[in-house]
Figure (cartoon, rainbow, N blue to C red):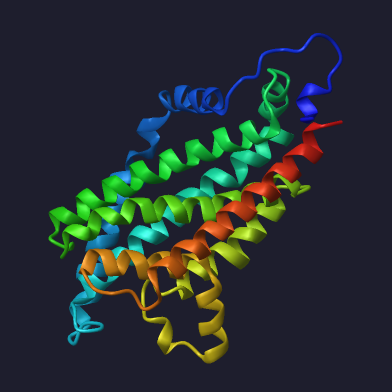
Length: 265
């Protein structure tokens, strides 16, 4: 029996995860303007600065294409990582330590799995809106070479779940917000730098190369690059998808376990 069903008193009707998503969407209606910079202006600056600025010094291009075309899919995936990490650290930590919103949701009553799923759905919404905006910006710069570029969005969705779900578990466990900073500096930032976003991982030493292959971001970058360039990925498509799905599913179970430990007293 689910923990929410073991409370004393008459049984209350179950509140679905969509209600949790509706709560975050309602709150986002008051704050969405603050995300315009990260959704539209930041992608434009990144494409201009890295793709056109740095790319002008890369005469030979990379893998037979211009640096701009090679870089854009990596920036798409890394933007998803930034948004997913941002929405999965302090907001989750706050839900237990500061605003304590999770305790209110648990008293609704909501099952632990619905609380986790509803919040993850909002993180997914944030990443997909940012990813769509980034696609529009890069399309305006002529940086998309294939109609398969639309396949980037489901890849970003899978990447979001692969990263956000484990981070949910970590943020729910973290005793202080210092641990969130440690996660950013020792895991998220190095992954973005060495997972094939800005340069091929083949140029890395063997040890770092193997670590890059283990990161979910590299798998998403390889899929996004294949989609936007209209080429075959370095690894098998089913292998990429199963690897990302494994991270997402495993992270969801860990997050539910961590949330349950904090909420069920």
